[in-house]
Length: 73
Image (cartoon, one colour):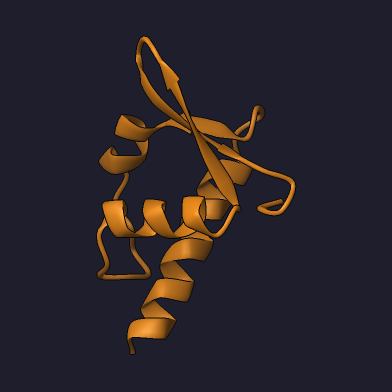
């Protein structure tokens, strides 16, 4: 149950980022989105995709920007 929730949540976040023309989004905008396929929190899933190399975090004056890497595409 945990692994399936993690996998579904990771996929949902990646799809959310893939829909964007620049393949990135501010972290605070991601946290405002409701995740439908998992009960895991945004923080955990963001750490998961960043730690696995599918996305990277960039510091900007407006907040942290989450951008997909080639591995995430």
